[in-house]
Amino acid sequence: MGETQEITLTQMRKSVEKLGSSTEKHGDPTLMRFLIARSMDPNKAAKMYVQWQKWRASLVPNDFISDSEVTEELAAKKIYLQSLSNKGFPVFICEGSKHFPSKDQLQFKKFVVHLLDKSIASSFKGREIGNEKLIGVLDLKNISYKNVDARGMITGFQFLQAYYPERLAKCFILNMPWFFVSVWRLISRFLDKATLEKIVIVTSDDERRDFVKEVGEETLPEEYGGRAKLRPLQEVKLVPLED
Image 1 (cartoon, rainbow, N blue to C red):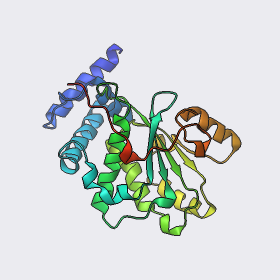
Image 2 (image 1 turned 60 degrees about the vertical axis):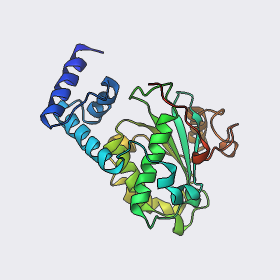
Image 3 (image 1 turned 30 degrees about the vertical axis):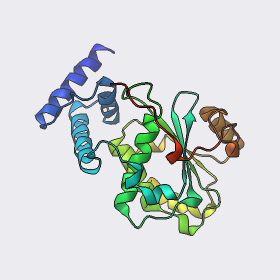
Image 4 (image 1 turned 180 degrees about the horizontal axis):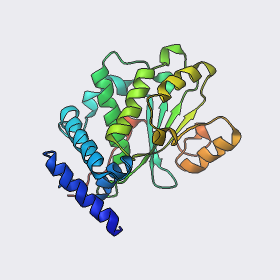
């Protein structure tokens, strides 16, 4: 780490303290994610970090969302958590045809946190470093109008932007039907440039080859051109962290 980065990190820590909070529970890799997301501005990064802490304390007071808090969302069996990609990123797959807009928005928000937290934690090697990333795959095959949930997708992406900065490595959208294009235009208005640059709408053979290569055949399920089996999110057991 360069001297400039060290100075910026120190400035951010001081700025967080001025805002009445603390960075003692998180190391440099975590703080760097917030700095990168705010163009290395220590004051803006500190503000974002403190907002994240407050949001986390409010929505996730136990620091994790248990299966029992999101039973209805899990029951749909729409999310699969695969092993790690070629670059060591966890890969989750969402089957859009099994998703329906939630009547319980609080549970849906908790489910987004449950999914992101569990996906990231599946890449931990004994402990969290703080700079882990993930790959999301959204499969829109066989979706109908009943499955369309612009509000839900906006919530998911806004959570990534505001509370999981620099966690998204790539998001691949597969099998987008013609009627979803206008929905996607609406959703994309709520996404910042850095997020949009990480989203690939897979349409051509070249893009599909890149998708398979990026995820890796050992991790990608057979249904998508790989050699793995689909692993439902709730069946994945995480290894306990080291103290």
